[in-house]
Image 1 (cartoon, helix red, strand yellow):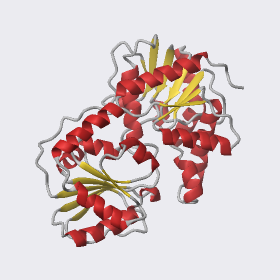
Image 2: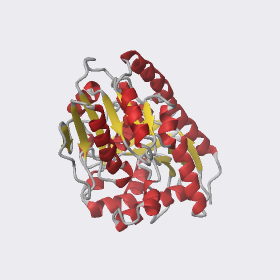
Image 3: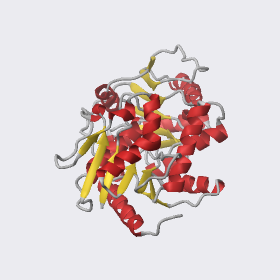
Amino acid sequence: MRLTYSMADQDFVRTKSVGIFNVALGLAERIAIRPEFSRLTVLTNHTLADHLRLPPNVPVHPCNQAIAGRLRRLIWDQRGVYRAAVRTGNEWLCLPKGFASFVTRCPVKLATYVHDTIHDFYREKYPGRMSSLESAYFFRSMLASIRHSRVIFTNSEFSRSEIRRLARTRGLAAPEVVRVGIGFAPVNQMPTEKDERLLVMTTRWPHKRADLAVDYLAKWHAASGFKGTIDWLGSLPANLTFPNLPGWRLHSRVSDEQLALWLARSRALIYFTEYEGFGMPPVEAVLAGTCPVYSQIPVTSEVMRGLGCPFENASYESFAQAMDRALVVSSDVLDDWARRLLQWHDWDKVVDRFVCGLSEADSAPVRS
């Protein structure tokens, strides 16, 4: 098979999802060494030079127009990426962010990696909380992926079911949707000494439930007498005030090196959410040697399979119990959890499923 893989529209500094960025990188680097592809061409841009590591025999086509302002990005999404794919001469195009053109059909065989249906979730649960133009744009692009892809890859069975549900509700015939998953690599763990620190992941987006995180953690902090530092990483909704409590600190962004150090030396990682396509932070915490305390929603239950310390969003008591359990988890237990998670979320298995799904779609009848 001959495949064009487009990362031209991805920029680490500007990305809204570091997780999606890292999945796209990891998949590209591992596809590049698979013998099933007689030719792989990667569409890239100048910002990826320090991030993307490909064998020297893989052609890389710079397409900097994809990140050269909003208008040129729209032109790229709707027509430019397809034109670039045709110029490579490859039979397949893969869009690892999952958004196809709704202006024109792809002139080559199209594969997309759809990470979630978050725009549909916001339309139903939080109408008006996203830019109406941006929401409409990406929602139409997602529907175009369902209409025009020969195969859709995704990260979890939950996301697979969500894509199929969305297709049904919109009266669309979905292509084959294949759960390939996400792979993780072992982490070179930092020294095992732990600080009296908790690390909380938060964003301004309402589905991350920063309101619950502040409420529940303040109650637990007062009840437990925890004397250490509680570092919040990210942002808060505009209508939520960060409490002036002892040891509470809010950081908008830190370096990768600082984050790795904090993650390894924290007593627990705390992760509130009510919707994800996968939910990577609990897995990443375990691999760094730290116990995750996380919202138990369908996809985190699927991904973690009971490991870590899950809690119910609707119950402070459930959260408090999860926190108390997390602080006594031993390093031996964490090591066992890490081994099991690496077996379940293995990059070789991810790429095996990707290659198999693409091969089967390659020989399937063309949808009308």
